[in-house]
Length: 292
Image (cartoon, rainbow, N blue to C red; front, side):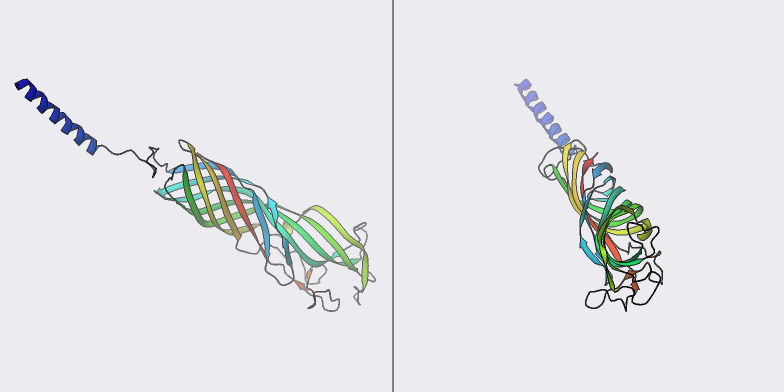
């Protein structure tokens, strides 16, 4: 009888100790679904591809935007966590943007013998512009906790870019030619018979800005694959803030100026004036990559 009482007392004490230890031990981190998972890292890095849809937003009264282009790029991303759901996002993006624009200007020389011909032409230039940028983004990134396998995020910030190279594909419509080379009296009254001439891979670094600043707004998800590795999917609106057209090579003599059109939209030989092109470049960048 005494042994049975001692055994029962010992069992009660052991059970109490076990319950106390269980109450004092920390609970494993878990997601909303209750699955045990690793602790959140303080620093994450990844690589991604950047397919994009880009266009030019024309800000002057005489140029026109003619459509968007599809371009590609790649990048490196880094997230520095400073709280459970907040991070500073940065990295390095190498991408291309651009767009289609059209305007009127003057060119010198017949395209078949431009080096030896001094005839001036009024032309309509339809340009498909491609700009190559390397950009450093800095943004605030807001993340949810992992829901199932997915973490949702949004970001807002700025990007500073350097122009590596700019090229253009031009469709130049030779509309009018000078009656007599070197004269200034009604020089545009004769229609040109040349028509439309294409120029490919034209270097235009001198006609675009060297640097750009952009506002960045994005949304996306991280899909947990295994451990700390996740698939990154997102879309970012990269909105240029300043004029990316450089007009430094166009002079006041109107021989190289972009030309204003008349009120009816036609070219008026008697009242042509030059103007500066103003446009900003915009793009939607789609991110597809891996975070580690």
